[in-house]
Image (cartoon, rainbow, N blue to C red):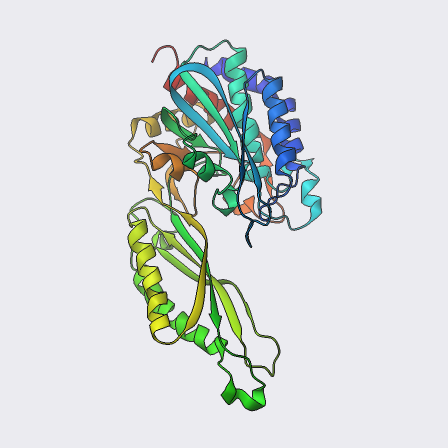
Length: 406
């Protein structure tokens, strides 16, 4: 059956490449959340073409600074019948492009170049054609494959996975979940959590010649930053037990100043300064405890006279599944069967949508074509041979976990 699956995938190579390019050509940049309806329509047409059912779930959220549009479209589908489900879950939004030419996908040396080619539109194609292979081969499953396509992964999932979870539509009867993030040949079995926020420190403007009448928001911001740096030093002493490279990346993270702004002119006391901070939480840490500790720092600054506002624009919990879990071992076997290489397990350095499934106790993993090192860059690409291999891995994993001999 492994050979039959690989032969089927090989016969689809032209279709898979064409569909990947079609997805990449749609500028689903997030923020602000462009072209979601167009991409959802393309995915729905592909599901119809493959003879698979499709449900579209529409979610609206208030626009904010990060997501300036309010409409999102989630698509769900399935193949097979039965109570237990293995979920293939992917997102169709992409980070903003460095130029519009990134939405003009090109092929060179067996690679597709363009924004989203690695993260993760080629992975969506691999998911779909894995199911097509099983369907065309007449495979009978003791259960079903659930297909889930969502937006908003790049900004926390408000109109995507989070909305589906709140509505009770995510991960029903799941035995496991797999998402095609660009893992570069490894399996991600854990992810960090995140609290991302913007702090705005307020002062009072005045001409430099009458500085005594003003309140310098920049200096107040520096005082707050010092408190946060002291906390960062404590946070960095903690390390995860999950494997991640380089070794220094095992430390828990508090990053300051990813974005900062303020001031009106060189000769005016700044009335307002703002900066972002990103707290990345290892799986061994408690999300609520870490959030509380962070907010207490701002409370302390207020007690010391600081006038400040906080906007939390992203929250996500960490998650982790043991690499010794039976489903982890089965997935690793499938990867080795297809690629000939034993995959390592690692923790993803960022957030993963695996967390929405792991919160319900489901084993959840990321394995997909492409490399994280190029995924958000100006020359993002994916090697199509890796897309074809991943499609075979997904189909083989579904067969192993849900096949007739189970």
